[in-house]
Length: 66
Image (cartoon, rainbow, N blue to C red; front, side):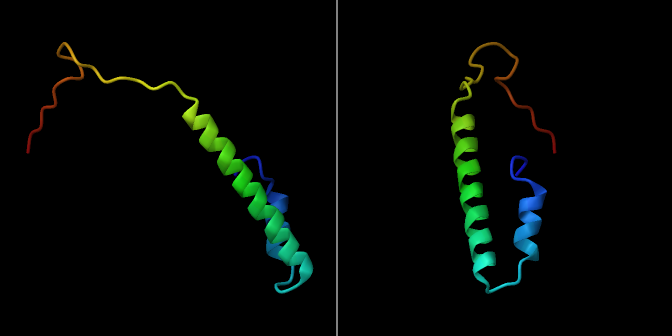
């Protein structure tokens, strides 16, 4: 929620409930959050995928002690 300003969130919280202004503010905030979520998903999917170690002793064994 870094790109959505605190002022926008405060504006939604400060508008009287049930008015057209509050409904419009909620709609705009919801669309902004949906847009940001889509951008974040795209950013995460663009990260390179790493592979796990398959050889050697580092990262291939797990020792558990109770």
